[in-house]
Structure formats: structure tokens, C-alpha cells
Amino acid sequence: MSAMRWPVYAWSSGADMHLWARGGEDAERAGVYPIESWCLEEGWAGGLSMPQALYDELVVIRFAQIVNDGLLTRTVRRLRTSCATSTTPIGKRARTAGALA
Figure 1 (cartoon, rainbow, N blue to C red):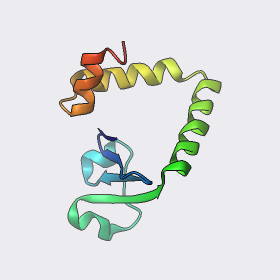
Figure 2: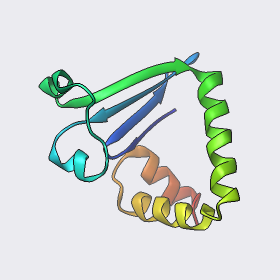
Figure 3: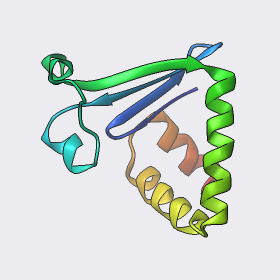
């Protein structure tokens, strides 16, 4: 699995999940910024890797919060809009499969 949701790139290498974010002014306007300035030398704000099982647990916890706070519809609409204009493979697959219809 891999996905790009500007400015964050996420991918799984099997046992681990990796998240990396681009740096720069556009990313900062999107709310992604470096904690350490050295990260920007290569255009990345930073990243992390974690066991896939831990990431899965965090996703479930966050999903429960989104549902509890009544934000699911708004989140899906925002993602649908993003995928509708995306030229990435995940965006194309979502449009083709009607995954977010």
C-alpha cells in the first residue's frame, strides 16, 4: 500500500508503515512543518517508521474519534475531492472503482 496525500507520503513495506512529509512553504500552509531545520535540506519536513500493527491500532483509534465527533461525512467529502483531482495511482483507482462515491 502506498498513498500520497500532499504533502504526506505513506507506504507499507510489509511489517512497517512509513510516513514522510515534504517541506517548504506549500507544506507549511497545509499544516506540515519540520521540527528540526536540517530536515529541509533535502525538501522533507521529516518522517517516521513504525510497526504496521501499531499504525493499524492508531488508525482505528482515530477513526473512532472521527465517528464520535461527527466528522466522518466531512472527512470523506474532503478525501473525495482530493481523489477526484489526483493523478496518483490511488486517486485513479478510487475514481475508477467508485470507492468514494
